[in-house]
Length: 171
Image (cartoon, rainbow, N blue to C red; front, side):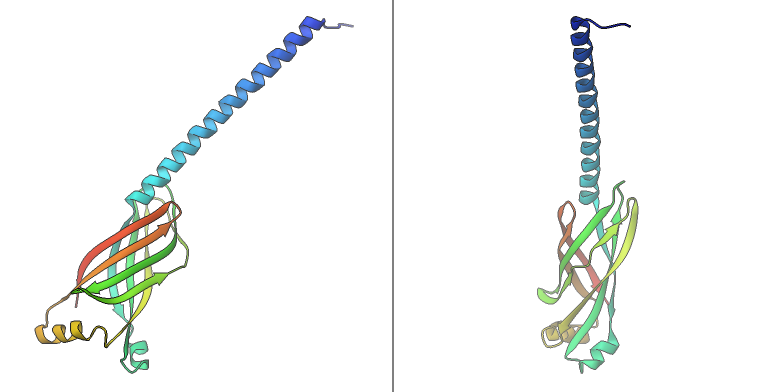
């Protein structure tokens, strides 16, 4: 029966130790590169996320229920993700203003995911006091012109806070 010498045992141990260390370093390096690429792709997705308001819908039944003291509406926003990574949205805080007056704050804490290379329309419910927006409403009735609306705020995603600033006209 063959019995390795002490130097052969040390050489075999050394070779195994070096080979295992090298393969672990290679695997660790490959894992690091993959993690870097994944995070870079996620960061690009968060930076390139676009928010485009689609529509503002007045909820007339709820407004009537409040005896027209509050105006209830839903702001629909198309969230577009052109990148190759999903983005998880955790929180939405937006403020709708017109002519320097606040028309409402849109707050949503429901979590949703915008798939990679896709878009999703989300609805945010809001309500304003009719008395608080009375000046804007009176101006609309007098002039019969579209109301300029500005939507600003922040959306919290899995990679940080994204700023929103959008201008449109309503009616």
